[in-house]
Length: 275
Image 1 (cartoon, rainbow, N blue to C red):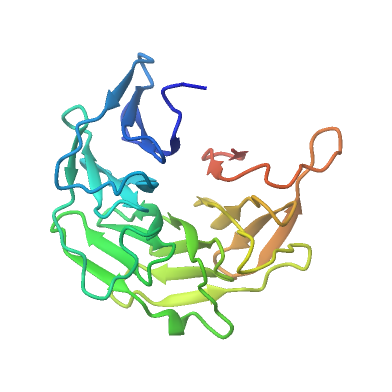
Image 2: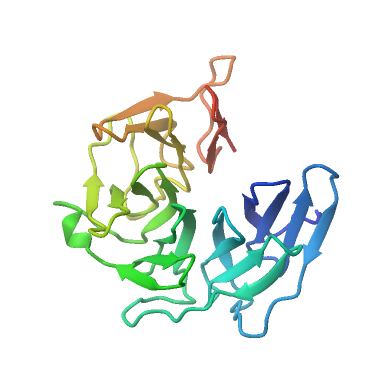
């Protein structure tokens, strides 16, 4: 295949009419106009954004609700932004990594979320959750893993992050062995959730439990599909912390194969789309 979306894994919507597809192994962004169907390749990277080729520059992106789509740096050494108000100019986010943030350019972050004031990046190999103020570009890093709770092992970290629409960020475990909730207030308190149902089986630290998750704000539940190691979808009640394993079957009754789904998208109504 030589399609325009080859080498792309994640995308973000600008809140208007354009979806921006983010490069995974490609070296360009694709802007897809949902009204006209026109696609545009954005290749004009600023010289001060180090994509660290030939690696995987970005995994994850989020629109800040105002002006920019922020790209989560995986192997790239900088955070890049796409200005959605001028057709897609790309620039380097104007901040400096705080001292102590590790693994920049080496599978550092995987996933981004915004709470209307801050953009948050989920750590993969990095030791820190990073939060950037979208108005002032002030940045802090959070490493309070000792708050998570007994038995927490970060390992190869997290593969996604979602906002509950109120005051909590949720980190989706890849090889980390717990979901982690981070409060968005000044305390940035971390809390771990590890009581997985017995039906959910994964070889922690070896297999990836999840590649991403989504949040149902109406029912206040977190949903995570299993990419490998299990045939169950996990639903976490964000008020109680309880989890339920939901078996996945085709209409024929045949179980879905492992490694079938990687991500979930909530429609806003009563449906969950597994992709």
